Amino acid sequence: MKVPDDVSAMLRLKELGWGTRSIAAELGCSRTTVRRWLREGGWRRASTPERASVLAGHEAWLSERFRRHGGNADVVRQELAAEKGVTVSLRTVERAVAPLRQALRAEALATVRFETAPGEQLQIDFGERRVEIGDATVRVFLFVATLGYSRRIHVRAFRGERQEDWFDGMESAFAAFGGVPREVLLDNARALITRHNPESREVTINPKLHAFARHWGFRVRACAPYRARTKGKDERGVAYVKRNAIAGRRFESFAALEAHLAQWTREVADVRIHGTTADAPMARFLRDEKAALRPLPLCGPISRRAS
Image (tube, rainbow, N blue to C red; front, side, top):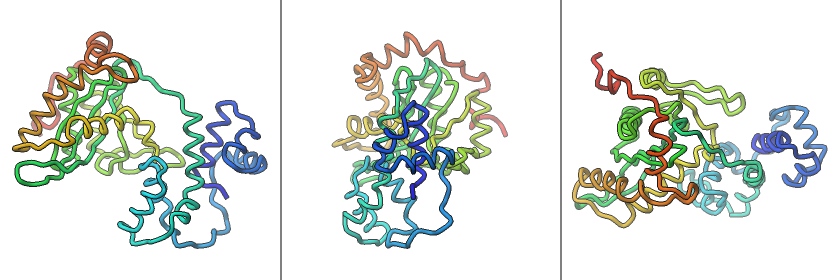
């Protein structure tokens, strides 16, 4: 029995020209198994249920956490005990995630770096961090928007991750960049995506996001569930903000935090030499991407329009 991720990996490797022998060796299964799933063209649930185990019912949770932590089964085991009250050995977790580990390896082999054209894509995400503000430790939500071509970022601090915070973050990013990209790539946040079927890839966009996108003139693209690697530029951007802009700092007020993020973006993030592009994001933006963005709508932010 193979999990959906295994079958998806088989199909991707086949599309890249791999033979059944190579796919079987890479995923640790027989060529017969590979041929069967290639004939099926996708994963199908077995008619006979598998034997129940202590981790039965937690498959989706295990898959999400395993991917989130980059394949670290021990961290997954610790969170399983803390959040689900399920205490098992590390070996039990390793057996449960073994097919996922194989799929991650196949994805790494099959993934080709995807570079977007100037003005084509903006990736957005939220990251959470506890920050010393005044005399208290405050839970802060960091909105990070990353232009796919130049890698220029825009950062905002919020007290929550509500739908209006997503919209406010995007609007401020468009204003900061002076234009709108052709598409915005985002995760499957409940405030934005109503439903995303992992098998059919059918996406149902929240009606308010649909109206927001129409107003600003961009198309919405959602990452496939548990495939955050498709949004890798912004995932790395969130980590960069946490490590470089926030870590070890204390702020007198929330306003001081916001002012620091704006200054840090101008003086550090915009002018650093990016490890992938070997260029400063601001220089790359001004040279190639600024003119490729669509003009801001004349009617301004949708949240400020009269109802």
